[in-house]
Length: 110
Image 1 (cartoon, rainbow, N blue to C red):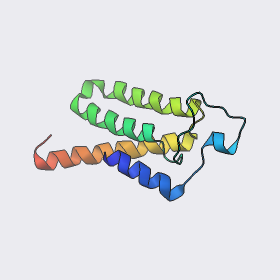
Image 2 (image 1 turned 90 degrees about the vertical axis):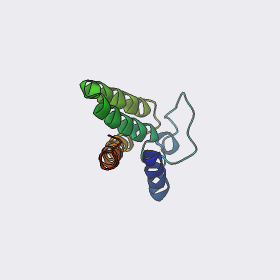
Image 3 (image 1 turned 60 degrees about the horizontal axis):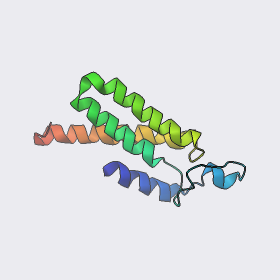
Image 4 (image 1 turned 120 degrees about the vertical axis):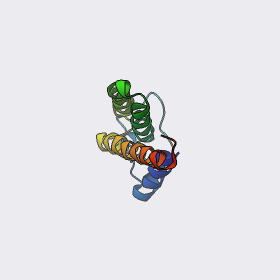
């Protein structure tokens, strides 16, 4: 939830148009989300999830990170996001995930 809050606050702060909104030649198969592009929500959520799951199951951390990257890339390939939206989303998600892990360590939830 923290990743979602941060992502949506960022979206409405910067209010960046999507690639297909600026270039009508770019067609999407999924439709166009009705909120700003920067940062990618999918990337933010997957970055946070991969970080937390990698902490819980360390032997799969690399696999989780690769899955997050693949989900992020799908948004780029689909013409819904710019690369910067996806990269920033993954980085932000990772930071939120690390914050959640650090917080869990302070209250005994780790």
